[in-house]
Each structure stands twice: as structure tokens, then as C-alpha cells.
Length: 388
Image (cartoon, rainbow, N blue to C red):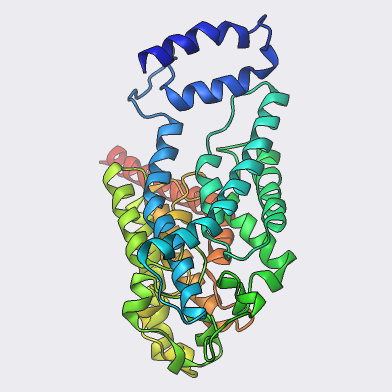
């Protein structure tokens, strides 16, 4: 590492003001700070100093996503082997899924980072680090069979409209990864819904065994086909069709534990999202008027993208509430609204995406009223002290 550091220091003047490659200063700075923690420090005011910068924070989230990504790759191969009625080895299953998921990741990072670098260069700013996470989240929340050109358009929309028009990382109102999925859902609904989109090569229909549908648990539940729902064990472990990274609740919880232990993710938001979903599920159970509302409340938490959204989407530090009490309110409403959309809207069986995007818009308002309530409470206390 010392030799690499010396080499970077040697070529660095070429990318600084007055150097031959001055126009690529932002790009060089991005690669340098990716490899090494910046040596710049604050000189004015009071600041908390530690060894964690934004890039390291983003890398921690990427590490937390690895269990879901690796399992998702295996599950892609597993679902395909089931569809053709064959039994593959662990390596064959994983390798097939790896080859299917890798292009999604490459396109996501390639398109997204190209736009990020272009905006940074044009503005003369540092490259934003936020896409390190968004670039991996997007491939994990889309069907494995989504055409790459559609994914490229969705990523471009998410980065340009969702981030850069607001000023880049830290200024965006909505979660960029969810905006990419929302764009795909509303622009190309046939490629984001139905049974065939969740299984690689199932759309071709070649060699598919009789009786295999590829329907997700939420699709079956929305059609009131409760007898076709997988077992709770299969849904918790992730042996079901679905988006690449959303099927395994176990893998998601492993990532959640890592985020909580490292202090990167808000456990308050995670717990409150699950609490809101559980509350909505119990309410549906109490006033059940159809088979979907009779599904046990806890079972909703391991279906679809609920767990993934609670751990990796709702906790986005930019678009979520920032006040401590606001996090509880924000998370609870996300979970409650997700089930509200999921159960009461037959046209869209998965409600987590819409719930989080809606609460992204209301997060600043929640924080505002929490702060205002705190100010009023302190004012009343001060007045009581003054009178006494």
C-alpha cells in the first residue's frame, strides 16, 4: 500500500490546478479517496473527528448487502433449475445466477457512475459517493429478466432526476434506487409484473416443466390463491421467486445486524417499520373480509420486499427522518402504508416501494413538527421555572 500511496502522490500534481490533466481533477480525487482516507481536516468550528468518511459509510452498506446479493445469485439459478425440472449442484446453481445478475450490476454502476462523474466534472465538484450503494441496490430490487437497456434508462432517470437536479448526494428528496424501480414499474409494467419476469429465461417458455408458474407469494395472495403460497420456512429462507435481493429474509437480517452493530443503519427505523407492518396486519386480521386479509400479520413481514425495504431503503439517512422521535413515526407509517397498499390495492400487490417514496416526501414535515413540539415543550418548562 505504501508503494501505491507514493505512486499516487507522484502523479497527483498532474491532476491539480495547472497540471496537464486538470480537467479530470474530480475523477482523480474520487479514485484517490476510494483507496485512501482523505488527509484533509476541518480547521474552523467544532466538529466530531473519526476515521469514517462518507465513502467508508457507503462501503459498510455494500458489505451489508453482500449476503442478499450472493443468496440472490444462487436463488436465480435455483428457480431456473426448478422451472426446467433439473437438479443442479451448488456451484452450477450459483454460477448460473452469477452470470445473470452480473450484467445488471455492471450496467447499473456503469451508467450511474458515468453520469455522476460527468456532473462532477462539469461542476468542478468532488464526485458524490452515494451511488456506491444505489448502484448495488438497483440490481437487487428489479426482476432478473429485466432488459438491460430498460435498466440503463431507469438508472439514468434515478441519478439525473432523483439526485443531480437536487444537487447530488445529501440533497435528494427521494430514494434514487426506489425511483429507478418506480420508473420501470410505471414505464414498463409488463416487465415488472406477472409471473414470467421473476425467473431467468422463463419468458421463453422453453423446457418449462408442467405446473411451474413462477408466481411470487404476493401475486398468489393478491389472486386469493392461498393454497399456492410457499411455506413460511421457504419465504424466510428465500427459496421463492422475486427480485434478486428481496427473497431471503434471513440474509436481509444478517445485513441488518451488521448495519446496527456498526452504527450505520437506524435500528429505530427498522423496528418501527416492522412494527407498523405488524399493526396493519393485525388490523386486517381483526376485520378480515377476504382471504388476503386473513393472512397472519407476521407472515406479511417475510413476504415480498417488506424486509428489504425496512432494512436498506427506509433507513436511507438522506431521505428518512432525522429526529429521534421522527424516526419512530416515519418508520411506523412506512410499514403501515406498505401493507395498506399491498392488501387493499389489487392492482399492485407490493406496497413497500410506494410507501417509502410517499414517506420520503413527508419526512421533512415530520421532523419539522417534532422540532416544533420540542420547542413548545421547552418554552412551557422555562415559563414554569420563571413563574416559580
